[in-house]
Image 1 (tube, helix red, strand yellow):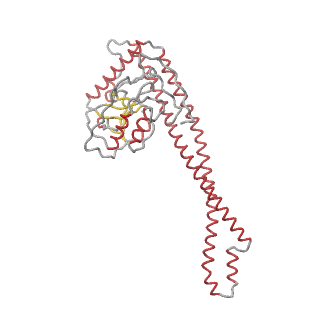
Image 2 (cartoon, rainbow, N blue to C red; image 1 turned 45 degrees about the vertical axis):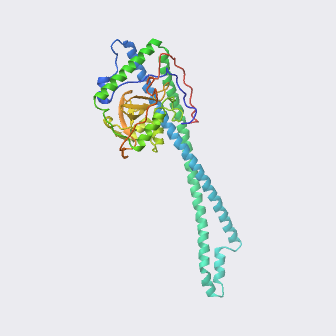
Image 3 (cartoon, rainbow, N blue to C red; image 1 turned 180 degrees about the vertical axis):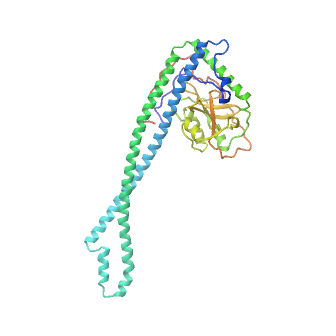
Length: 389
């Protein structure tokens, strides 16, 4: 997604959500840890709800942006076809004009045929009959091309108008969705701006404890015991995703310098040679679902009840993800957010016979998945450019 998107919300922007897979959700539901201030746990719950609302709005915006890009490409193609059709129409008009002039000057097919009929040499008439037929066929083809060119030009012009009308509707929808995201991010910022450094530290501590608890429960269930190798494309997607570690999360971005969650996963698979849906909801809806205990590197792990977050599985119970504004692309435990399920972009592909996972860069797991810290304060996001989408 090009230029003008909502730039990085500072490291105090959003809070992360923690839970386990649906099967272990009840056992790992976040709550006040021993000695934790219950008010901080309540705050974490409130931030979780605000974050989910913001991320849901973000993915809706991404979906509209993706559709708008398709419509723009369609409009460009139609414009080119319309130019070609109008050129063909002009050529056909020229031929039709020539035909009319020849008719007027007595050089039409009819005139030639009449001259042959009045000829005193019947053999000559028979010899020239094929000439008349060939000429008549050419004239008929000219008329047919003219009629067809007019019809095609009219059809393309009508279709082009429809596409442009749809673009205007989508642009208005996109702007409304952008404003919704900004409002929800502001709500998170407003909540965080009121917190003290000690409260932010306690939030981070509680968040980390819940992640560890959720990951431990998932591992104990046996869901992470799979050691399946990826497909060739899956391995390529993993290598690409890992190479992006450290790049900033930017709302609505899909690389190459910054990403949001589904921007990272869709770009990784595009680099592996396979186009997948742009948003996490469509990835969840359209791609083949696989059990969490059957994960292989390259699969996509979908989070939250409405499929509003996604990460790319790399094996050993880990994912690469662009967590949220204020954070960077990083390696996280697969249970760093509440699991909804998993999907496989290439279910028909054969797994590799052997696989050596790429080495993780130093500090790949460093930093909080929460996107906030006690050392920074929230700042207001800038507005994205709708026309640049």
